[in-house]
Amino acid sequence: MRLMTTIQQAPGWGRRRLLVALTGAALLAAALLAGLAYVLVDAVTDQAPANPVLVSSTASPASGLGWRDQVAAAPMLRVDPAAAREGTPAATPGRAIVVPPATREGPAGVPTGYPRTSAGAVGQLAAIDTTVLTGMSLERTWQVHRGWALPGASHVGQWVMTENVRAFLAAAGPAAPAGAPAAVVAIPAGGQVKGTDGPNWVVACVLLRVDATIARTASIAYGHCERMQWHEGRWQIAPGTQPATAPSTWPGTELAASAGWLAWAETGQP
Image (cartoon, rainbow, N blue to C red; front, side, top):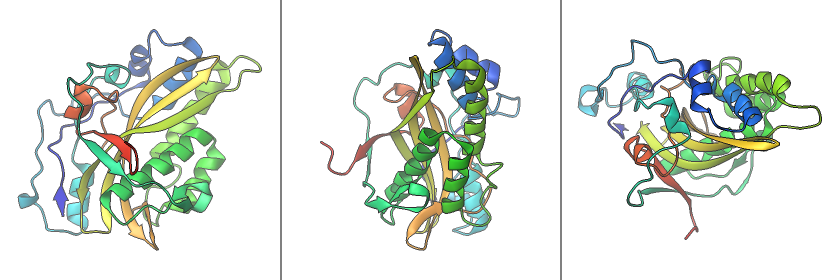
């Protein structure tokens, strides 16, 4: 029943803005990431507020659908597209979010077994995202969506992860030279809890480092939020429209900390 952060409108990345952000990366890998990130965030528009927008729990219902919609829709930090590939390293180590490890395999081969906690919801979303991105096929994406999206969640055709995969595959076709398969690695680098409504509902956010390789490698950061709901003993993608776009900032930078990202740490790590 609380919103975790003071937040500001996210920027948009159109296809052209992303290509500019990837200037200087390996050409073929950059082309693939351009396809991947084309739909990560929309182009910056005049509707994006220039100043922080504070959402206070005192002005919202204590719980329920209206509060959940408010938490999900609240805009997040606005960052430049270049923030996804570089930034000023933080002067001091930032705080970390300690995420419990998965304990078993769930539907569609997605790791699961995360506890009924906010950190568990963040861990489950990261497992869903990394499974989709490393599989990088529409069939695999549909399998994951079918196993993890509750009725009323975004349709698989409109799910942001489906759009990511579709854009990547569209770019990979002409970009890849004959006999040079594309490879994608997605690694959780940060997380945050945007808000909660009791113990069974969380807007969880993950920050991934995504590496795409065709002969050479290009890297980009990707922030993603989802409504997550505890159902039948596991966290699943909850009903409702997709949350506002999360800021895609390079991990470990001052800007990442300003955007609310906590460094990723799993239970048992030093």
